[in-house]
Each structure stands twice: as C-alpha cells, then as structure tokens.
Length: 350
Image (cartoon, rainbow, N blue to C red; front, top):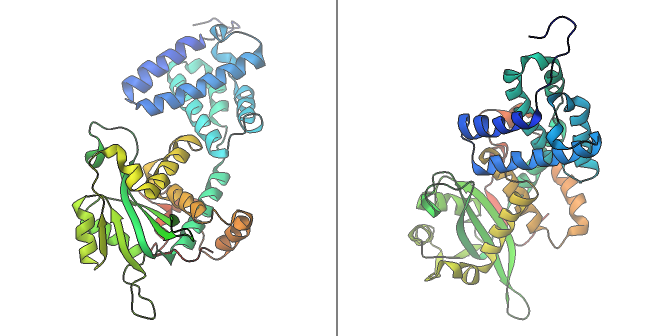
C-alpha cells in the first residue's frame, strides 16, 4: 500500500484488457464467439480513438488514461464521425461498462474514476422511441391480409448451436410469407411480406401463422383471399394447407443450395432480414427479434412508396397504442406481443 501522500500507481491497461477477455468473458461468462467479437471491435475502436486523443501508443496506456471524459469523447466520435446510431452507441457503451465493472473488483483503489465511467448513461430515450415506432409499424401491418398465391418457408435466426437447421437449440424459428402476383409480362413479382417468430415449424405453428395472414377471409363471391401456398417438402406445410383447405404447391429441393432459385422471393426477404440484423444492428436479442423483423417487413411492404414513407409512418404512430419503457424491459416481455398480428393484406399498404 502506498504511504500517505504517495500517488497510487495506475495498472497497465493491456494486462487488464487481457485478463478481462481471457478470465471474465471466455472463462467466467463463457461468452459466445459473437459476443467476444463485438467486445473486441469495441475496444479496437476505443484504442484507436485513445491513441489519437492522447497521442501515445496503446502499449503504454494505463487505467488512469481511460477516464470519463475520454469515454464520452469516444461515444461522441462514434455518432458524429462514424455515423453510428444510438443502438450501436449503447452497445459499445455496454461493453465499456462491463470492462469497468470487472476492473472495479481488481483495482478498488480507482473506484472514483471507475464510478464516473459507469455513470455515463445509455440513450434509453432514443432506444424506447425506436421501439415505439416499430410497434406502430407492426400494428399497421396487422390490419392487412395476404392474398392469392403465397410463398412460404421457415428460417433460423441466432447464434450457432451444436446442431444445424430445424434441430438447432440456440436459434429462433421464423416463418416467412411473401404474396406473389404476375406483372404485365407474365413474370412473378413479390407483393407483401410477413415475418413471424414461432416456437417451431410444426403444423400448429404454421396454421396459426396462416390465420394471422388472413386465411379463411373470403371475397364477396365467397372465394378465399389466400388461395394457395408454395413451400418446400416439409410435411407440416402440406398438412397445414390441407387443414385450412388451401392448395399446396410443393417444391422438391433435391439440393438445399437450390432453395434460392425454387423459392426465390421468400429467400430474398429472409436474406435481406439477416443482412440488416447482422449489419446495421450487429445482431439483436431473441426478446426483441420480432420487433426488428416487423420493421423490416414494414419497409419492404412500402418499398414503392419511399417518398410517402414518413407521412405514412407518422399516421401509423398516432393511430396506435403507446409502449412504455417498463413494458419493453419487463422480464420475458415482447413489445410487439401487444399488437394483434391477425391480418396482413397484399392489395394495399397504408
């Protein structure tokens, strides 16, 4: 212990970071590869920023160098110079907070500095507002139905597990449906899409999904709006179609790699959704996956009305119920469970 009046020596930042990744993340928390990669990217960016700001090499950094003003400057740099959204900022801040909570146990002599960093707040207001808007998007799409021929398939979102495909224990199952129509040249084109997180790809789940799409709703002439589904050879689709008295167009996939050619539009929607979640959002939790998928579907369904999108979204926001922060963060809650999700249409998209 230093004597009275003697300055407390600040530990090397390199050794603290190494022990944080090896002992804390990999050892104690057994974090996934995606989590470790996200934390690694955060500290790589922070090290680069600190080197420019402090004009010293990262190998010579000590804990005292990373104070609250530096971290705040880093967060401003992410938003103003790198153009990161509030969610990305909050993700980076969460990684920094995790590191400093670990350091608090290792270096109690720097508690005051650590506390100041931990007091830096996340943008909860912006995050909540974004989810309010996503709920409005979902509520608006819940008023409409798909019609005609609908292409369907199931996909899996989430980190890798020990098993692949429908048997994966870590991925969430998502059902995707895209209505199809023929243009003047006779070519099939995608109409409207819907994505839904389900427990599994069973007959029961698919039938409930078809009900939400408007199965059973008829025209004035007594014909069903949703007339047929096209899917792969998974038996549950055929059984669900039979139970709902729908025509089932089965596509036999002899080569799994050919799915994108035989079921092109549903796979394009799924691929675009995964690209958005991995890219712009750098992954989302299973708890809020439905909210982000509903946003992606809403934007896809209004891709031809880009100039009207803002006005349409304002109308959607003022004509639906609100969502509180407590509801959004409640254990086991899903913001978009508040929406009815019983109808989606392929003939009009307000």
